[in-house]
Image 1 (spheres, rainbow, N blue to C red):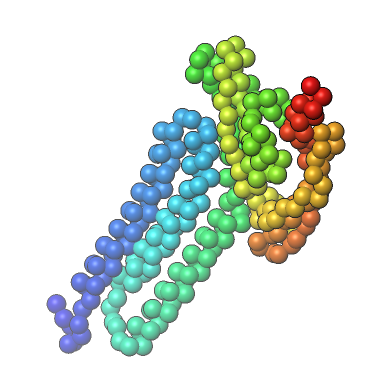
Image 2: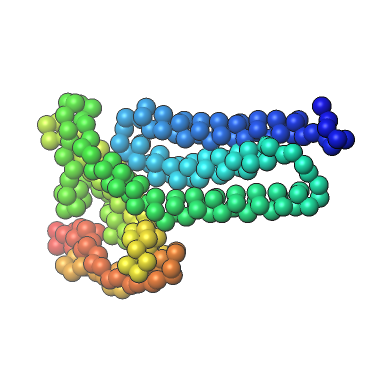
Amino acid sequence: MEESGLPTYDSWNNLAANIAMVCWAVGLLIVLGYFLKLLTTSDSKTKFDFINKYEIKLLWIAGLIIVIGACFFANANIIELNPLWIFVRVFTTVSMGMIVALIIQNLLKFYYPFFIEKRLKVLRYKPRISPKTGKPMKLLSEEEEDAYLDEGMQAEENLFSMDYDVWKDDETGYIKIEKYSGHLHAIQCPECNYQTFKVVREEILREPTATEEGEIAKHYLCSYCGHKARKVVGLKASNKFHEESHAATA
């Protein structure tokens, strides 16, 4: 019912409130669906890859949808509306929504990786269970695992583009090889202390030989403060040279 000839906005208020509820429900379902998927995934490597690929993205999407819902909810109690109030409401709602969304984005980008990295580390080194015996398997050392990696895999490890973990069941000899990106995750920046310090370029300074290690320079860049660093690390002696050497003397 109208009072003093002024229109009511019940239909808009109800619509805005319903949209807010739908947004909140969708955001909550995304989060619940994600963690339900994690709970039902038993394989540690599969869980590692799933968290690494989707967690931050899905949390950001869910957070953004929830913020949009909050913006509609804030405009679900309109009593009076005119051009000035429309401008004030739109400007205030969009500004507050962007501020909250930016806070969520920064938390996920600069703080949350500390938390997620610890969880990924636990998953990566959690003992694998042998499908042959049902017992925990042994994670081989860098030296031991080379016997089970082909030449291409070893070359990837030497260049730090990929990293391989080799798990072995000593009782049956069963082998499981898991592949990880060599410099996928950012580390803590020594300048700003955020988890935003990452390898952006690598260059081989000296090729490895059959008897001597080579050298590779890793160039780091912080995506937050722009801090740069260069670190030189050793490259393992190439097994290919060993094989060619043995063939020549045979």
